[in-house]
Amino acid sequence: MILHRPFDSLGGANHGWLDAKHHFSFAGYHDPARMGWGALRVWNDDTIQAQTGFPPHPHADMEIVTYVREGAITHQDNLGNRGRTEAGDVQVMSAGTGIQHGEYNLEPDATRIFQIWIIPDARGGAPTWGSKPFPKGDRSGRFSVLASGLDGDDDALPIRAAARVLGLTLAAGESAEYDFGADRYGYLVPAKGAVEVNGVRIDARDGAAIRDERAIRVTALEDAELVLVDTAP
Image (cartoon, rainbow, N blue to C red; front, side, top):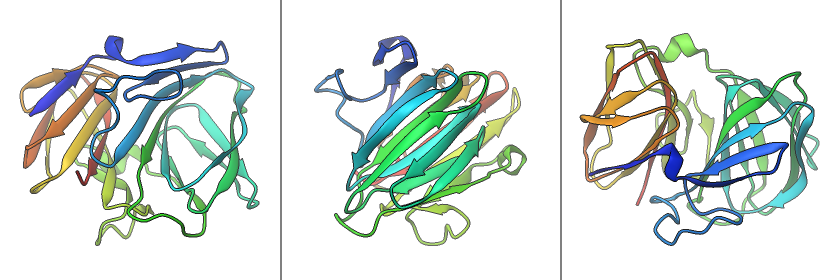
């Protein structure tokens, strides 16, 4: 089953400095039919204007993965971590017992991100933050694991959930396959370009909620860049 969620159907709010779209219920947007997808709880599509950002605020017991689509995001937290994550790269914050952080666009132009929240397998644990570059050439024509809590994904940023966050770039006409195995949920969003997922057209920034599909074949209808989450039910 692949449920197509067009971009125009997403919730959200435009705060001026932040134009936020929500694939799942978040903040002032509540849809009882969109409370999450397996352990995936939040997928926000955020445009952050230059020289603005999220002031310091707390989190606990959540795995927060930020995929930078355009521009760069600068992170700082009460543990002393500070870092800048550029377009195509990823940062992960395991909130654990609690962390306070701010996220800022210190760039001259707007920054666009996907922020993905995954429920951890267990509560607690020391909070951590990390960032890593993932050259797009390394995921050209194949899925590359960006963040993972599954065995064998040693090159990915670690998360504390039985889940994977993957990236893929395809030239128009190219295809790639991904095997979920049994009893998994998937959620796929193209950052750019239109694709077909097992024959279902998904345009840029649309969502594809995937369930009861052991594998998917993604075909680019135009040059495309996409992110996929594979998670437990």
